[in-house]
Amino acid sequence: MKQITILVILMALLAIGASALQVNGPTIGGLNQDRIKNVVTTFTFVNNNSAAMTGITYAAGSGAADAKYAMIFSGPSNLTAGATGTVTINSTIPLDHPGVDPVDLVEKAVKIGTVTVSGTVSGSTDTASADIYMQALNQLRVKKTRVDCDTKSQSVKDGDKIKNLKPGDVCTMEIEVENQFNTNDRNSQRIGDVKFDTIDVNIDSTSSDVDVDSGDSIDDLSAGDQDSVTSDVTIDSEASEGTNTVSIRVEGHDENGALHGEALDVRFEVKRLTHDLQIRRIELLPPSVSSCSASSVKVGINVLNQGKRDEKDAAVEVISSDLKFDKKTETIQLDKDDSTSLSFDLPVPKDAKEGVVRIDVKSFFDTTAPSNTASADLTISKCEDAKPVVEETPKVETKTTTVVPQTPVTPAGQAQAAPKKTSSFTESPAYVGLLAVLSILIAGAIVALIVVMMRRKRD
Image 1 (cartoon, rainbow, N blue to C red):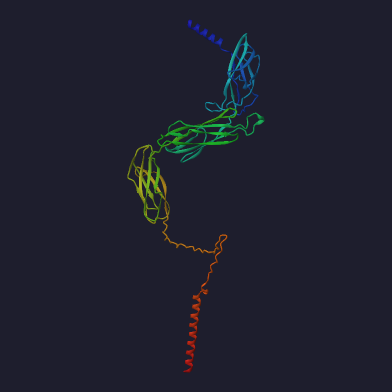
Image 2 (image 1 turned 90 degrees about the vertical axis):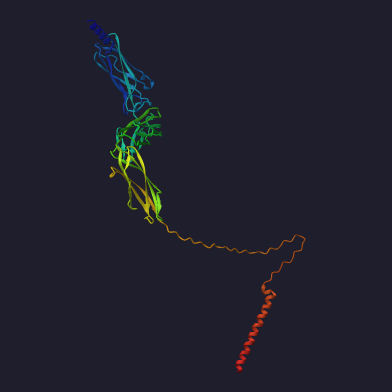
C-alpha cells in the first residue's frame, strides 16, 4: 500500500511539472530558398490544457534571437482549451547561412535556435519551446565524376560501383565542380554573380588496398563556371577481393561566407581470378637492330602471380613468327602475389626483313593452360650499302695581282730622279739580230731555189 501511494504522488508531480502546451518547431526556407529578407513561414502550437490560455507571447532564443535573422512573430494572443494556434514568422535568411550541413555536407535545414510560446492558464504560466531550423540553396555541386581505369571507363554518381578491378590496376578520377550561382545579381541582393575564392576537394579511401591522392583545390570559381581536379586511384598489387569505398568531399565558402558543397562515395570492387599470371613488363635490349649483320636481342620479362592460389606449374613462352622463333620455359613455381623475372635470347638473322616485328609473350598455368598475353615491338632497320667515298681534288684559286707603278715622292728641295724607262723585247738589240739572221736564211733559200730551177731548165 505504501508503494502504491508513492507511485501516485510521483505521477501527480510529473503531471504538475509537464506542460500541456505543445509547440511544433518551424523550418524556415528550403532546398531552393535564396538568402533574402522577408521570408515567411508558419508553425503551430496546441493548447492541451483543460482551460483557455490567455496572454500568449512568442520569443526566439538560443541563437535565433540574433539580429541577422530579424524574426517577427504574429499569432493569437488567446487560445481555447484543446485548440490549435497558427503563428507566422517573418524573417531574413542571412547571406552567410550554410547550404549544407557542415558535418556531412548534406543539403538539409540547420538548427539556428529555439522559439518559446508562453501563456496563462487558470492563473498559472504555461510555457513550451521547440527548435527552429533554417535552410538555404546550395550552389556548389559536383557536376560530373569520371573514372578511367586500365580496362574500363565510366561516369559515376554517389554510391556507384566500379566492378571487376584487378590488383595493380591504376585509375584516374576526374571530379568536375560547378558554381551554380546565377551570373547576374537580381536587384542588388548579392544572391547572384557570387564566386568562390577557394574550393577544397578532399579524397579518402576506407582501405589500404586502394591508394588515392589526398585531393586538390580550385581557386576563383566565378558564377556559372566549372573546373575540375584529377586524382590517381591505385589498386594495391596484393589487394584482397572485396569492395573499397573512396569518399569525395567538395566544399567551399562563397564570397558572402556561406558554406556550400557536396559529398559522394564511389566503390571500387576488386576481383581475383583463380589463375592469373600477369605479364607486367616486356623489355627489349636493344629495342632496334640493323639487318646488315646477324644479331641477338635480349627479351626481359616480369611475371606476377595475381591469382587466388600458388602456381606450381607456371610457364612463359616467347613467340615471333616473323623471325621463326618460339621458345617456352620449363615449369616455374610462383606463390600468390610473388613475381619473377625471365630472360630470352632472340636471334635476328642477317638480311632480316626491315620493319616492325611483334614479339608475343604468353603465360600459362598447369604448364599448358593459357592465362595472359602481351606483346612488344622490335624495329629492324634497313641495311644501307656502303658507298665509296670520292675525294674531290681541291680547287686552287688563282689570284691576279695588278702592280701599279708608284712615283716616288721626293722631299721638298731635292731634284726628282728621272723615271726608269721600261723597254720591250722588240726594242732590244737581240730582237734586231734575230731579224737579220732570219732575213739571210730566207734569202739563201730563195737563191738556192732559183739555182735548182735553172739547172733543170738546162737539162
